[in-house]
Amino acid sequence: DVKVTQSSRYLVKRTGEKVFLECVQDMDHENMFWYRQDPGLGLRLIYFSYDVKMKEKGDIPEGYSVSREKKERFSLILESASTNQTSMYLCASSRGGVARDTQYFGPGTRLTVL
Amino acid sequence: AQKITQTQPGMFVQEKEAVTLDCTYDTSDPSYGLFWYKQPSSGEMIFLIYQGSYDQQNATEGRYSLNFQKARKSANLVISASQLGDSAMYFCAMRGPLNRDDKIIFGKGTRLHILP
Image (cartoon, rainbow over all chains, first blue to last red; front, side, top):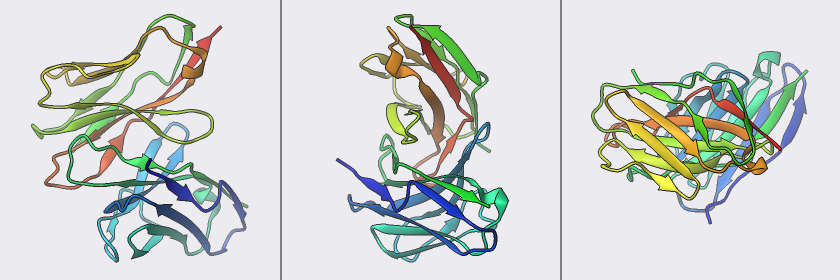
């Protein structure tokens, strides 16, 4: 079974803090993704990565950065957290190259920025 | 540009009835894939079913089937004999041609409530 884990289920931070969200997958997947989910907006892609040290911006990268130093780990960084970054953050991974291959999701991190 | 539209923000259905969740999409690519995911209150996204644009038959997975109408760009999810455990958020999603990238775009979701 594919397993995608995220470092925290719930996180509370203060405005201006640097926040790290960690994601680890155990299936040697090439691709990893970070989404944020807000009510009424669905899932929106923040960043994705096709390989170690490779990253590409998604639809809403502003205020975020990412790091992928090892294949199994993809980190999302909020350099200076703001209240409008309060959201549910979902990490996903996929093998890539197979049309019907789904993305596998972690359990999500619900981040509150005060 | 690709787009996914789910027009039903919420639905209430009696247990054991069939449910149809609507999804329309827009793309100019001839090759694409369509997905449905379920998200229970626990938050984890669960893959339900996949339909490829060149698949000749509608996809089925247990109680889930996908009513794929290519000319109308419609990919509705049908859940037969609904159960209380089907109460969740449901997302329709689309991936473009594989030679481009592996990104998936999501609709805004439909919240399904199954009534006892």
